[in-house]
Structures are given as structure tokens and as C-alpha cells.
Image (tube, rainbow, N blue to C red):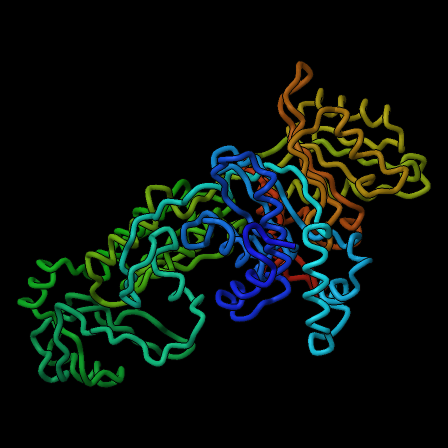
Length: 552
């Protein structure tokens, strides 16, 4: 059986020249690609999507104009031996794959394709004969529309020179190239040589520093007693300071070279204190303040109010990829007190080049890196469900537990009620809570999959939207979040469904998410997914939360 204009033997020779040997996958792939091409309307300008990295992409490149180089072929490794050809503009086309149900008459193909026989035990001649005989009869074809994201040529982004390796790369990869981010597929024999000599200063013996100005803060440390700047940047060193410097372990000091400093300014180098101010102005957002001048080249951020610390984690990571700068902070989502320090930033060298400064500022952009959002004093409605609780068989302890937790954030419980596992009574109770003026409804029980678990269904019947059910945290997995939209009976109500584990464990997902809801922060599935890291409580005998890592 031919493969387009090639005899089977001719295509085998073609495969050997292109692939190195006539791989069975490439021979079968030839029939697959030819079948797909025959079933496209004549004259169609098409692109290809291949679902495996093995052999099949080479068949596409042998029989079509599509290749990875011209970006008309996309390889997305789904582990399936399939190829789709689709109209370059509309995506409409066909998908061809091997159908295992059609392999029963071809035992050698069956053993090869499903890896039933080691490669050394395969009969390669018989396998090739079966492939030639089978042709495309072992394939299945279906009509598909290729998604737009797999079509077209992605235009090259802005090209920059990586400040670490000095090679060109697309700026969309970040402030440094992906190789220097740690994704290089090799170990370099040597690192590039970088001139680290600081501009604008001279290093001299302490005795020669008398009368000169210190180029930077110099810290004195007494273990367990004191750590702070003994000499400040710009301070003039006197003869009496020489002994103190030597006692600090400094026998050489950096002093300002006024001629060099002027030259550094002309060349665009910035002192660490000036750089820290630039960064602080960009990073500080609502509810955040910082003190000036910088302390030892560093600026700390403090909270202007009690509230929830919000950190743009992705942008902070991008900023820290920029060489010679840094920022460190407490975890995103931490509840902090007014006046508490939570982050700090600085330049790493004493002088930072203007180019590096602009690169770091470009990563920061115009949006702040840190915000502290005040927590609203919510009006809380508590809904406890369960026939066993309603009938007094089990004493209710949810209301006291939830009341204590929300009261810690100065919230007020406007209504609490216990109802049996009855959908109508639950719906009526939800309506009563709304009438009472609640803007946060915390429900307990009935959130799992048992037949009597009706709480979630009742909330949905009351119009709950933006539903997120289940979180990757233990304890607290069965939690539910959503929103009851505003109606004539009341305004918008946040909903938080808490599973029964809140009775047994001191800290659960409730404690992690409650302040975020009170801060008015939009909770997304992606944010919840990140909570899986650090989301496993150790149930310590003595709980130290929030000082432990749970939920961070």
C-alpha cells in the first residue's frame, strides 16, 4: 500500500534518511498523515497538531509543509498517538489516531503499539509487513476544530540581553532568561566573568580613612545584645574612630571617592539608599508605610492599620529574579497589627547601575507590591444544620465556636439558628438570616455527599453563585464558599460553609479564609490550589498557629 506518491519501500528509505532508521511509528504515521490530508477540502491551507513527541511529528514534516520551525506544527504531548490537520484560519479539520480495537488482525502491531513485547523480541520484518498491509485501516478519523491557541504564528516579543549571561532572549520570559532562572539543560563549564568593583568609593586602611566620609553604614554586632549601624553613610571618620573600627573587625573601610562618585552619577550609578527609596515608593500600596532615610541601605515596610497583608507573589518573584536587588516579606494572607513590620527591600551592591534600576522598576510596574486591607466588622449569621442537633440528641457546639472566632475580628452575630435536615426549613432559615441584616453567612454541617447533607443544595436553591466547593487543606477539605446576590430581602451575602472538623480541630481552613473574606479579597480557585502547600495541619499537642506554617 502506497503512502501518497511513495511506495512503501520508498517511504521507508525516506524515513531512514530523515529519522535515522525506519521506525515503525514513523511508517504508521505516514499512513495517518496521508489519511488526514485526503479528508481535507482541496486547497486547504492547514496546520498540524500532534499529540505525541515520538516519531509522528517526523511523519508530518515529511509529508506536509508543517514543521516546528515554521510553527505550523504544534506538538502537545498528551501521550496519545494522534495527529490533527486543521484549516489555518478556522481550525476546522480532522483528527486521525490508531484504534486499538482494529489491531486484532495484526498481532505484531498490537504487541509493538501496546508495548506487550520488548523491542529486542519484536519481529521487525513481520511488523513492517503488517504495517504495509494494514495501512490506514487501523486508524480512526473524526471531525474536529483546532482551538485558536494552537493556530497561527506567535510573534516574537521584545528581545533583551540577559544581565546574567549576556545572551539575547525574549523579554516575556522575565527579567533574566529562562536558562539563568535554572532551566538550562546543561551545566556550564564556567560562569561569565562580571566586574564587581563598586563605583564611587575607595577601600583604604582605617588609618588612612581619617577625615574621609564613610561610603555606607557599618554595623556593630554584639551577639544576643546589639545589632545596628555604628557608623552611618556620609559620617566623617575621626582619629578616635580608628580603634572602634578595629574592634569591630574592620581594618579596611570604604570611603567616598568624590571624584569617582561624581563620575558614577554621570555614568548612571545609584547609591543603595537612593535605590531603596525608588523601590519603596513603587512597592507600598494602601495601608502601607515606610520610614526614611534607609537603615543600613534597607527600607522596612509597616502596616498603617490592623488588617490582611496582600502580596503580589508572582511579581515579587519576578522582581527577585532581577540581579542585584531583593525584597522579602511575610506570607501573603497574613493578618498583621498596625505598626508591625512585614517586609524589606534593598539593592545588594553599594551602587546599582541605572540600567539595572530601570529593569527592576519595569518589573514592579505601576501597581503596588504590598497592601494592607482593613477587616470589616461583619454582621454574621450562623446556620447549624442536622436533625440530631435540632432534636437535642447532640448538643450544639458550633454556634459558640463560630461566635468566638468571628468575635475575635470584632464581628457581630446578628442571628444564629439550628434547623433539621429539611430543605424547606433550611431555605426559610437562610431567608431569616438575610432579613436580620447578615452580610456573612457561616453554615455548618451538610456539606459532604451523604444523602442527608442538604445544606449546600439549599444554599444553591437560594441563588448562591461563585461556588467553590472543596479545598486542598486538611482539616477543612469539605468547605464551601460562594455569594448570595442582593435581593429585596437584603444585600449581598458572603457564604462560608464549614465542615464538622471545626468542632474537633482548633484551627481549620475556616481560620485561614475568614480574614480574607472580611478584607473583601476575591478568592479564586487558583489561590485555593496554592494552599495545598502548607495546607496539612500536624495537629500539634500545643497549637502555635498562626506562628506555624499551616495555611501559608
